[in-house]
Amino acid sequence: MTTGFVLSRLIVVFVAMAAGFIAVKSHVLDQKTGTVLSRVIVYIFNPCMMLSSALTSERIFSNEDIYAFTGIAAACYAFLIATSFAVSKLLRVPKGQDGLYRFMYIFSNIGFFGLPVISSLYGPQATFLVAIFNIPFQLLTFTYGITLVSGGRRKLQFKMFLHPMILSSLLAYALYLLRIDLPQPAIDAVAFLGQAGSPAAMLVVGIILAGAPLKKVFANPRLYGLILVKMVLVPALVLLVLRRIFPAGENVELIISVAVTVMAMPIAANTAILSTQYGGDAENAACGVFLGTISSAATIPLLIWLIQTI
Image (spheres, rainbow, N blue to C red):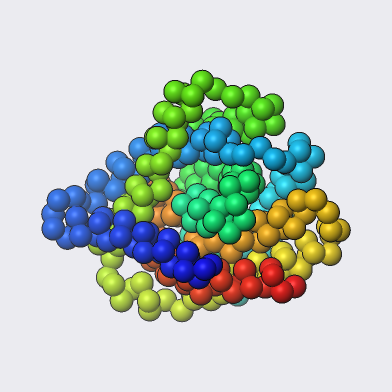
């Protein structure tokens, strides 16, 4: 059932990508559309998706559980950032593409893939745990991540921390911890807009791929190496470490399973979106998103098996 569900998500993803690809090839859309749509996703759809995850999630975890999982998420990102330099050297990434590869290694597709896959595997109660991983994701993506995909042309500035994605992530965290509920019409409106973010992101990937040579998608051995390290070796290592650190207890198994499964997600769709918006290598970014997403049909079931076995 796990493999079947992952495959069903892949089909949905590829249909959305194909729609953008075909629209460009048939001259209904052009590459400029992808740039404009990227801004709409970043400034409207994705902030609403973050708020919706806090407002609509089932609240079964104590604040202590949330703090513990926040610590796990922060530690995972610290590990990814620290080891990204070594991974880049291991893959012999050319200097001009170093930032892009490090971005692809650090950031995963938590929103469109992570939320539905983990909800299916572990139940709706796990949804907000995924959203917690999204908080450092957003904090880092729209600050440090921008400097990476832009090749260093964009420097860290204080105003980056006022980005709508960062503010919405922090607000979502506060709403959950404080158990604050908004009026139902407001919740419905935020959820409605948030649902548009994931399909729009995949549409942008398809638009970008339409301008890239197809052979480029599969002919880059560095991407295969990156996927092996990012989507298999690192999640397996996280599983082993968490099993040693946390004793058996209430919600512990769920917390470990969600953390490892999040780490096994494919390359973030934001890679292509931010590369388009900030003048990075959008073609290689789109190829990485596409190839990583395909590979998840094999890597995610493998990691689920490891979680159940170890």
